[in-house]
Length: 88
Image 1 (spheres, rainbow, N blue to C red):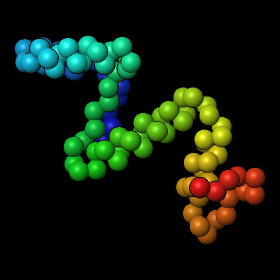
Image 2 (image 1 turned 135 degrees about the horizontal axis):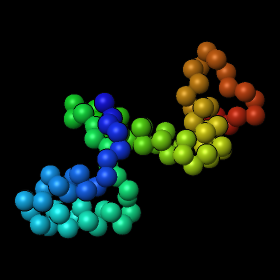
Image 3 (image 1 turned 60 degrees about the vertical axis):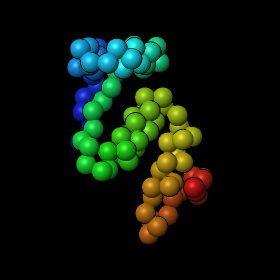
Image 4 (image 1 turned 60 degrees about the horizontal axis):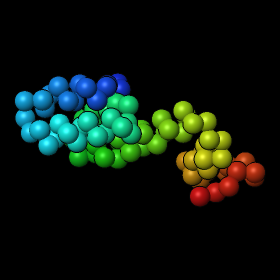
């Protein structure tokens, strides 16, 4: 599970009565990030979050070269990639 994007203010509200150091760190994240997505903490959360973020970035930036590279790397071995597509 990867949740919908939430503003950092939602995370800040959860910790506003806790450590002020943590709240300050959340504020500093706002300079670089627009929000957070929550992931189920089941032991695979890092991998799920990483690949979700990677694919989300791939779609939003419209980087065709990286998209083609990803497609070549994810093509099953029994179905060869088009000849113009670089392999990983």
